[in-house]
Amino acid sequence: MNDMKKELKTKPVINCAIYTRKSCEEGLEQEFNSLDAQFEAGKAYITSQKSEGWKVYKRYDDGGYSGGNIERPGLKQLMQDIENGYINCVVVYKVDRLSRSLSDFFKLMETFDRKGISFVSVTQSFNTTNSMGKLTLNILLSFPQFEREVTGERIRDKISASKKKGMWMGGIVPLGYDIVERKLTPNLEETKTIKYIFNSYLETKSIDLLKQKMNLEGMKTKQWQAKSGKTYGKTKWTNSMLGRVLRNQVYVGKVYHNGNTYEGEHCGIADEGLFNQVQELLNNQNRRNNDTLEVGKYLLFQKLYNEQGEMFKCDACIKTNKIKNKTIKVRYNYYITENKRLKCEKVDKTVIELTRQFITAKHQNLMPAENDEIAKIDWDNLGNQRQKVLIKHLINKAVYKDDEIKLEINRDVILNLKEYQSNKLNNTTINETFNHQIYISSDKQIINIIVDTRTNKIIPTKVDKTLLKAVATGYRYKRAMENGISLSILSKQENKQDTYISRISMLGYLSSRIIENIFEAKHAENLTISILEKIANQSSDWKIQEQMFAKHQ
Image (cartoon, rainbow, N blue to C red; front, side):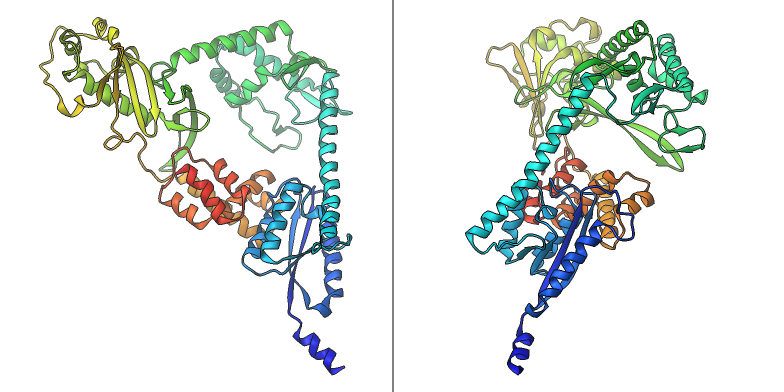
């Protein structure tokens, strides 16, 4: 008996983590929910192994998270504690609580094996120390993944088949309709607003003017609950909201799905002829707006390319800044490709300065006639807008590569600059410092002006306060959930959607070195919050995160 007691005392303590998960949030508000039931089952199993030194270390919950991926705060914290050496065993109610994806499960098991972590499923008996046990585990895990994928296919097929029949399949209810017995039914009061929007747009021919008019008249959006007087979203009209209404085919009794349009079960609100007139006007305005981009907002509109020949598109965002208690909206313009984002202000400033130097200097490698034609341009007296028009006329193409920009000028254009010339000749001399940046193409038709990357970087280093704020917010959300505040409660406190809280909280798991680089602006300008989220979601291993981040430095 004494030998048995001695043996029990010498048993090593095995810290057991109990992981619980539920895919949806329904029922989590109950006093005793599914997560509690899973925990109690795990706790009872650990208690039965008390003689082996097992004890409950900590509970890790993921309520409202799918098992199809590993983007879960509770699982992230579990893996972090495993890396820190706090845990010896992971206990779950069923295998699919940990993961419903074979590939994700294998990654988790690799970490468990590397750290010597035991894995136990309370309701499924297997032993991963032998080949038969591993085969059993793989078979058990294959069923949840198969079930999840088949269920997804069924849902997608069901939605597609239903849409083809013109059925409403859920989502945000459009203005002008209510849901009655799962079908779109016209709301008489909101129908008047829809007809007003379509008719007024044809009169004003401007979404911005229509927005101002509707806001002044106090016309309510769908987010305004007239009966209760409460709001659950924006109560003022915006350009994007009106644009979605004017483009929505639901108002002519149709349903859109995967690029196809089908006749809907519901009644249309707008006349189809009126709807088509609006579409034609919208399309014409888009073309006109693109033309106005050529001078002014986007100096290199349809002229800037990367080294692979991909043309940069024009983009913009509106940010709200507070200055002396006043809210000011500022527009930021960008040239973008799939992998690069350049501030127009920086690029355009560089291009203007290069052109100024080119215009105000004589060049040894140009013909005398070309130098004479350039000398007739009085750059300083052209004015900013006129200078930009000249640049658009002069530059045939611009190529961006690794903080270096090359401007291509067709030599024939130089001999056709009368519109920008004055009678006064500039007494300019050869500019030696600029001369080495001009190269003539092999066919002698194109002049290449190249920015020296050592002396004229296009993108200066600047701390991105938006990224810093997002990381700080993510860390705050992470700490709140670690302290026991549920996702639903936190979203109410922050007045944010659950998906936003969950997404931003992942930034709290970023490597400290990555955060230091962000704080010191040691990253590419195209680094965005979404890229940081992907890095955090990809792996909890800081080394792997830092390797991924290195691509954006």
